[in-house]
Length: 394
Image 1 (cartoon, rainbow, N blue to C red):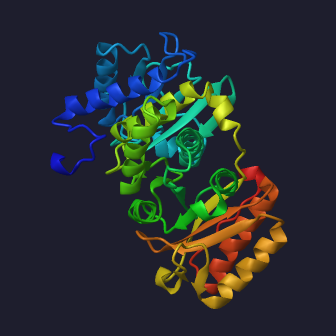
Image 2 (cartoon, rainbow, N blue to C red):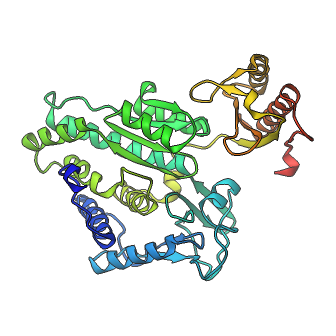
Image 3 (cartoon, rainbow, N blue to C red):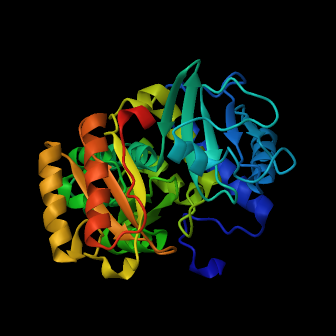
C-alpha cells in the first residue's frame, strides 16, 4: 500500500518502475561526488553469476534500465537458466561456503570485480580473481562497507547541522556465524553497544535491527541482508533539510531509502549500493577487502540421536543444556588461544548439531573445531564418527 511509504520512497507501481527507481537513486547517489572521480565508464563492467536461476533475467532487465537512463556502468549477467543446473557449482552459497569462484557455464569472464547471486536473487556475495588469487567478500564484508559509509555520512551531517540535530543510533546486527574479525572492526567503527548478536535467521536479525536502531544494518554471512530506517531517521533528515539543504551527506542519506529494499533482502539493490559506495569512496574491491582480515573458521555438523537435547541462550552463542557441554567448550576455547571461540546449535531442519569454530591460526581452528565436534558427539549421543579437521584436508 503506497499510502504508508515514507516521503523519501517513491511508489513502485510495477517491476519496471522498481528498476527505474533503483537506477535513478543509484545515479543520483553517484552525482553527489563533486570530485567526479568515480569510474563510471565502459571499461568498468561488473560480472554477475546468476546461479542459473531466475535472477538472470532481472540482472539483464536492470542493466537495460541502467543503459536506457544514461548509466555507463555495465552489468554482465552470466549463468542463466538455459546455461546449467540451478546452484550447481555456482551461486552465492557455492562461492561463500567453498571460498572459490563459480563455474562459468557460458563465457568465462576476466572477473576482477564480480559477484554471485543465489537462485532467487535475495543473496549476494562479491569476489575478485586475478590469476590464482581469489578474494571473497561475503555478507560480513558487505555490512562493514555499508556501516563504514553510513557512519561517515551521519558524522558529516552532524558536523554541518550542529547540536540541533537529534542523535541517530546507527548499528548493526550479526549472528554468531559472523566472523569475529568483522565484529571487532564494526565495534571500532560504531561502538561496542551498537553491534548486536541475534539468533540465526533473517526474521530474527531483521526484528533486532528494527527494534534497536534508527538506522539498522544486518547481513548474514551468506549475503542476505538490508538496511532499515526508522521514524527518527526521517524526522532528523526533515529537520536537517531546513538547516543544511544541499549538504552532500544529507543528499546521500535522503537517497538511500529509495535505493535499499527494506522489506526483504534484494541482491539487485545491494549490488547497486555496494557499487555506488565503492565509487564514492574511491575504493576498489581489494581495498575494500583489506579493511580487515577474516579469522580462519570451520563449520561442521554432528549426527546425534536427538538434537533437541541441545539448548542455547537467546543468540545461540552459548549452550545451556546439557550444562557440562558448555563447560567443556569453554576449556577448549581457552586452550585454542586468545580470541578463539566456538558454539554449537541444533539444526532447525535435520537431526544434527551444527558446530562453528574460529581462532587466530588455521591449526588452532582445526584443533578447536575437531574438539568441539568430539565433545558434542560424546556428550550428546552422537551417531557414527565425529568430523575432524587437519590442515591436510583443507
